[in-house]
Picture 1: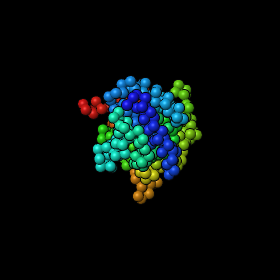
Picture 2: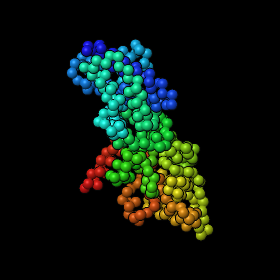
Picture 3: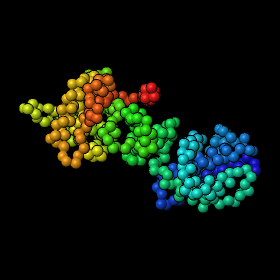
Length: 379
């Protein structure tokens, strides 16, 4: 079979798949597009791996010629750049074909086997009608995708599969928009959560996303408050920091994470005729407990932890009701000394110190911290 015939057969398959996925009335447009693009990537990879007799179509030339052929047929979104994305999309999710193979009970899906046969040099199925095979694949693939194509384009920028899987799980669970997904990646949510967890819990992040089961699960290190638009080199008071947070409360709740409800600012309680004020009071419905946050714009001192201990004790003894979990206290500071925190707080304490920063963190810096942390654990 000539190179021209091979290319036409490949373009035929693209066109047939495009038409079938567009006619899936029960499917959303976004889902059909995702399934179509995964299949397009599959076709390219399978064609490239076919081997003999195709050397003149390999590499950049294949993509460029295929894109030109598809453009003549009026298939939108099949530029050379997009075709490379489709190939990367397929290669980034090998577990999907593995899962389908398990479901079908065969090494290769019969439908995919038919399609692969049409891509072989020896195939004489010039009049092959792949409608049934494509429909079968679309039906099996659809449950494996739950995000829009725009989300997957963002996820493809992540080279570490565990990190990519974490953001995918979280985007689905929290109905993140594309913009919110971009922000969470930009502010290195995965690395910040990983820094406060042991190796097994990091593995769970990739498999299940963030699961809130205990107090430590809600912590991040650091918290990123770039949305407050406060300059790092400007002077601001704790009151101004608090006011800025209240002004961007929706953003702050997203940064805090799952299950948080806002209750009050400057919550006052009186003890021995003295008045005390908790900067911010939240309730976490997943843990069923109060979460108190005290803001410190300077370096953390042991007195700050002692003050938070008093706040937590008061809420546990006078505010918490039967059936609720112990109160959690977080001192959110600009700088902290881990040794000081460890020395000041008793083991098993429900009080934590976390840093905040007013700019997006360097992912490289956080990843290096993860490497250093792993080496310390091994040592």
